[in-house]
Amino acid sequence: MSFTLAIVGRPNVGKSTLFNRLVGKRLALVDDQPGVTRDLREGEAKLGDLRFTVIDTAGLEDATDDSLQGRMRRLTERAVEMADACLFMIDARAGVTPTDEVFADILRRKGSPVFVAANKAEGMAADAGVMEAYGLGLGDPIRLSAEHGEGLNELYTALMPLA
Ligand code: GDP
Ligand code: MG
Image: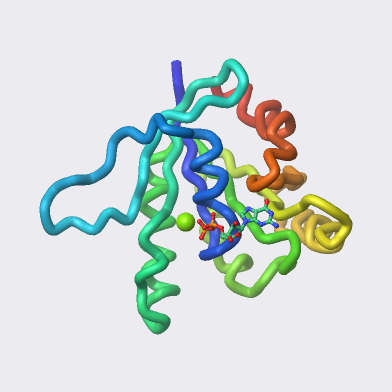
């Protein structure tokens, strides 16, 4: 049995970087109905011997500022509904922001498993942000560098029970 993981979080934290790393060139199902915004990307992820479906909440880039919050919320709700589990990503260099707290509130109310990833965690500049991520109340954060491919073993260990 495979599972579906949604990567959620505010723009620019590194969701697509992780998505691309997990999916490589195996980008699969996209919504290509005419007139439908391609705001969720879905691909077949490979992580060690794990195979699963991963959803990236794309399409936030072209949202106008005043609609961004609402759009993020709707996209996140949809991704969470489609997924068996969520990876909630924060930028460890920026630390936990008020927007991150809003996301954490949404995710805390869901029944499905939520993992916290503190991304951009290569180097000591991220240490404080990783500590803050413990305070989200969603379990121990996974220290990740999507760009440098660090922390993937921890991610593997977290996801393995879902397979
Ligand atoms: P998204 O908006 O959440 O999908 O974020 P992106 O994946 O587009 O990444 C936003 C920016 O963060 C890009 O410039 C990435 O190169 C950068 N980035 C992503 N992951 C890391 C990381 O692990 N470390 C650092 N330092 N930068 C990263
Ligand atoms: Mg993205």
